Image (cartoon, rainbow, N blue to C red):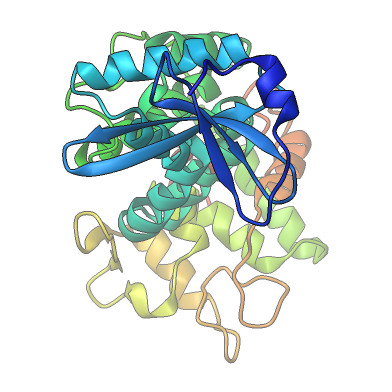
Length: 343
């Protein structure tokens, strides 16, 4: 059979069934002609006991000599013991970062993290990580990719560092799941940005002013009572914002002066209460069919956002330099020193 040439390819006509025209100088390289008239270049070889046939591309896209060059490269790889067709299929089916994030959520975030931490992980994935890295193949992500991503967020160093932590965990699990070689985590050796300290403690005078503002708001009756209760409990207990916002009545043990908070990581967490906090909780009244101490405006739900209320308290108390938000994302404690007459 003669060498495959452009003239021979152009002259090949469609038949009732597909057929092949093979090159005599490179026997495993040929042309497939379909009944539709479509023509494409192919190469065939054996990998162990399996016969492989790979499409190189259509005649309308590749010139004959270009296709021949690809065939030579593939056949050379086969002689080295490789299987290019299997490699191509593996690459085509390889997970990208978006798909890894789905498995990461299903098998780690949803199972092992607290609700507040899970919310923050998903927010970082949705807003920062996946828009930048979502299309990359997991096995091909390099340290340079992660370094550039981290650098691009240098204007928000806190967020950049949190995203770095999420990526580190994702790649550790990718190794465990066999999606990357052991020890290949591309987050390694990337230094976090310095972060400004986020809290300062209020003086006794400032704390008293906060107490006065809360009492004024309570008297006026314009603010949600549960928001006022939440602020007072944060100050009197030292609990995290998420712990107070999701506090259930069943967690209270006022006889023993403690809160018994469930913790999916470490088991039950005991928070010992001072007498002011005990008195405050003893005076609070549950809402029917609502299990939450900090009840929201929706039936059966807890209050979901304390930040707007805290900003109003802060502005009224004149604490401009204290901090503009109570942020559940960062799970801070309210850094206040309780005083006896706070309530």
